[in-house]
Length: 152
Image (cartoon, rainbow, N blue to C red; front, side):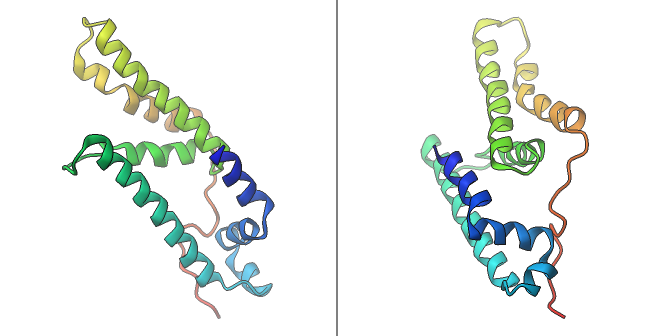
């Protein structure tokens, strides 16, 4: 349900159009009167809040904060965004694929004890590498990704 809300919000609202505009072509967005820096800062704060909720989930799941609590799942999430072609629906589909690999890790460790545990532990990460390296093809990030905007 949340993915439908995010998808509609990003692709069917004025806020979503402006968000995509400041990521793809900030000069054009500035030309039509969008405050690019304010929009970017606002979206970074929203993204940071969502990431904080995700971090709190990991802490509550384990019961305490400890070193390497995420076990590299942040990189898998980044790979899901890339594999999902920078769209919410695609990212959820990729996350389900990587979640399936993690579930297979648990299932194989219980049902097939003859496979070494180190090989089974690599399964989600191998699925991530194969998906991003081999199946993605040509994925293009937003044009202004990582570029600071300086108003001229």
